[in-house]
Length: 439
Length: 60
Image: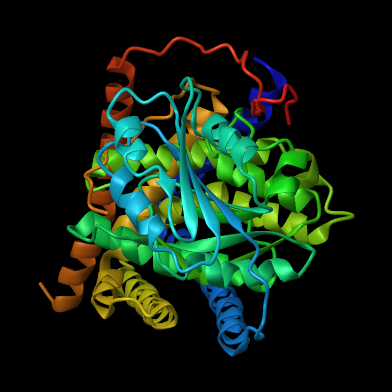
């Protein structure tokens, strides 16, 4: 076993032992004399309250910082006469024949004075190249260039695009994303601050066709974008999302471009930028609409890749995790990622099972119900607040009723299983999602 | 059965079913992955950035 594997595996084993001992103690306590049972009930109440405090603190920290970012960005006026430097839009595409034309047509509608679109066909085996080439050429305010290369993965396609890009700011996106017309125009002014290295955009789900995709739409608004908004207030967004991110081209190249040793090249590049001391902002008006998985198995495949990719990227920066100085904000950012990727899912799954058990074993059913009502109210409030801030569909709010007790719990189980695979260093592949072509 | 007991039962069943669904779906995904033939390892020989050829004989 190599050193990279040993640490996470030992941690995981320790966690499993603690869980096993806890479970055995609970089973024993259920059969124990009355005074022991009373003690266990009191202990359960304390644990439940602690769990709630952590959850509420997490929610309100995100909501508060997110609100401050909302105020800041809503009140900010873009001065007249601002210069808009030309921008290169890089579109890596592998077997995106179904969606590439729609994606390019949306890019041609961007409201920006001067930009180029670079499509990198990453050795597709379908008609991606032919469909993209059909739209290549010069347009009034932009030009479309299409290039093909041997298949080497998304990171290598993005690197090829970076090499072809001629302008100082690059926008990296997914071929299945559709950008809103104002996307570049509202993001570019952030680069007037010379310490800003990247700007993360706002990803939204386009295909709200069933319960899975609607729950994901709510998750993007209430979970992912709210966290990004809160991080944006601190200028330390820790994941510039793959579907929409703007970067200083020279900075990305100086950092070696996208690395190919993780399955979350967007997270990896973001961490490299933060480590190098660059600020990363969030622009909620830079909107990319993307297709979310419509089937459970595809959703699991996506989350499996995200979880393992984030853990791989974090593994490359583990030294910083153990040494907060000199860059405390970066350390906090990494700690938050570890918390969200591993600690919180483990707490969430174990907490749910623990409370279900004590409700049955110790007759604490009223307590369980009160806990459920409180959490659901919290989710409803958070959904209302974030849907309001994002000017999203109000029809997403009722999904908050099953958001935590079903969707997040399910995703957290998958995250834990994926963490276990990463700890065991099992082999993985990209696992490309089949596009339905709804953009 | 009171309303409270009914709701608590629904909550407990939902929690258990969700956890089981998560594990079973993950196992199904794992089996699907195992059945797929593994792609051969690609040896990284090409440079990370390629260089554009400029006709006058210089390259950027």
